Image (tube, rainbow, N blue to C red):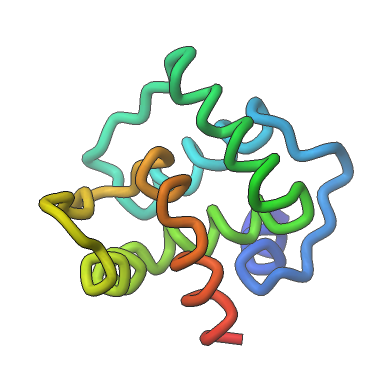
Length: 116
């Protein structure tokens, strides 16, 4: 069941039974990070939960979960594309970070759409 839902989220076919809130998104993030980056510890403080809320608002509730699923699964590709477009000294984090995804959400959406 979990695997089927994860596949639906990644392909964009999943319609969550509840509203996508920062709490729902953080729970999904923790689960997927545990599967994809098991050595990394995920902590959600007030700032991070706020960033999740802004991410949902900016990207849209309907795209937030698929975007996070895509970014976590394809982090290396997203990182690479973001680094190509970055100006200044910012370097993409080695592991997924919501702040980086929030700042570069247009690149994330572009990479997602190119893979459709």
